[in-house]
Image (cartoon, rainbow, N blue to C red; front, side):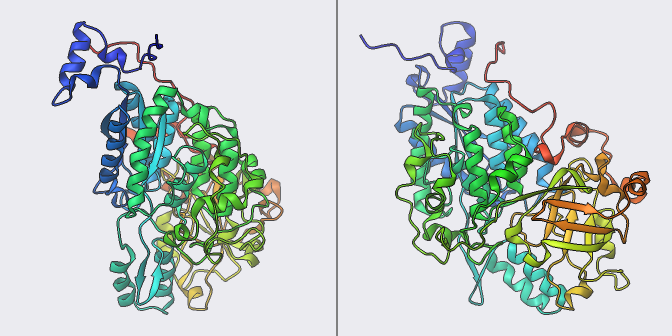
Length: 575
């Protein structure tokens, strides 16, 4: 006789003949056959589609393909709309709600009769929040990234969404591009469904989801309109059912080795600095020890192989055509832990044999990298005792060692009010400092660290300056930007004490960011009153809960009571 199948988590709802199981089955029938409740895996499709998250609008189509795969494998697909965060739309910043979205996803997965989950994300915060929530429940889970949009062009020139917004808007302020032409390019930038087509945060997190082992290999980086994305979504639905039957959970897949691989890949891809806070937060949910110093060590000496905006020239459609993620990982395979598992149950190394570079202008061979050492660099010093980061691949090489006098802004409003003032005492060697923009201060740690340059310097031909901020910057942005400074100004960090004219010393090779002011004098200063006056002081709701409990950027900016997980058990019934 064959062995009986292992009981499913959903059996606690549907199996049995008592009143409660009757209720659970009866209310879910609505056309479902009797066999829907006879021990088939119940697979939630966590869908972040929303008309207000334009990069994720197409995920309902992707969900249908996932559902077909679930049905084919003998499971029951159940679409579960979850909190969606559109980076371009919500104010004050989508990062304010990453943890809320993760908490909501976690609770809905745990509360419902679900055996496994397929996570559909695209825009920046959606994949991190989905993975964080799923990791805390630890039911079988995998990701289907929504994929990048196709390349847009304007007057024969490719447009990188995000990166070219920053570039072209600065040219308008410099007087080298008319506002009319700038506005005309708007209709050409977003050509199709999908997320940003640069190596911004959305592309980075989709690719790192695969490196972490959480996608069906070969899925990340597929353009959103590509029919192969729907085929992979179908196979992901099938895989979700087998993951439930095999008991394969996030805690078995996403390990220390997985994070090592993600950090190495981040450098080779020229990926977003935002990946740092998301990887730290995800590690915290899984109980995997991960620190900024480990990120610096693992990312040190990683060659930049991908010539994509913002660190290079091309776009994600080119990246896919040139060989995609597998080609990059094969080039750096000696730096990876190839034994790290994927959601298929097989190691990552088994999926790299077919990786090949088809266009060396887009993906460079290891022998001729764009940059020999491109990993995210972690800085410490007088201004960042708990750490700060910089992306050398997106910076100006001549500014990676720099000394300049601080020009300080106490809030975003202060920045906007004064940055173009002809009387602003600033020159090309100055260091622009923006504070009060960390997790607690803003709140939510917005993408404002790539400060616009003073108009009078743009007119002089200046296109980059050293900038220092306790906030984040868009993954599509570029420049010599020191960001995620910790502790943040609102938490009493040294950034709160910097004054105009203080000499700031940046030494990326030495991993330092310092203020050259006598220690006793600097310690005796009080935080700037103007910064303190501008800090967020919420009195209710999520914003108050967030400000009261958020941790620093150096740990991933999760809420203190959300670190770790509660598992999938729900011992009490609802009736």
